[in-house]
Length: 113
Length: 117
Figure 1 (cartoon, rainbow over the protein chains, first blue to last red):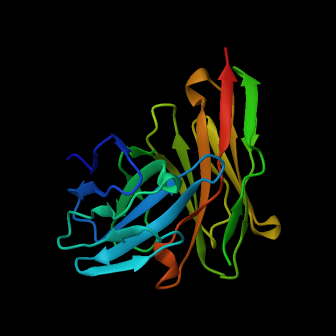
Figure 2: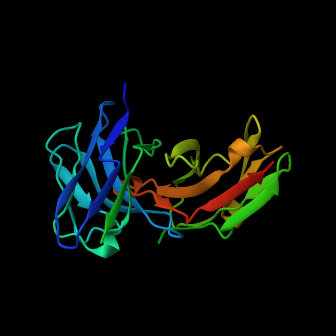
């Protein structure tokens, strides 16, 4: 049981490049989400999904796309990276029981130069 | 609107001291959930506790205890006899119970705790 797995752990991009952060969970959780962590700002919700085929925006969705084709996977796409997207990204999942705790992946540290 | 405030940016204590991390929240809902997470230097986020708004009993787990007071909208976290391994960033978070709100966990900015030997 691996929990929530994020890849890659580190990534450096140049401005304008695109990439996908991968997230997979093996707990059969319906809910998945992406957060970004910036110094002094805690974690902020980017996008979330309550099940396959359903996604919605969080607090800071601009510049990011998501899709949920399977229960297990929830990739985050940066279409045209900007230095403001330099951050640590966390994927999380939980079951559908109301307000159950989030299980987090180990994070992806992204630097955009 | 929801908001979580952790006014203490950084706290430094000597090992074996007791330390309290403050968390103040804002919400218009009567039903909500409060959480604490720990982020050690290795970077992962570890769930510590969840409390719902109808349960104001304090909770103790080993050296950790939590004091939930609805009257002051606070959910403070105390570590008794702190240890070096407690050094981490601690986040308080809030979610409301509504159909859409329950999917949005709002985090405070975190408190960095340094426990010196």
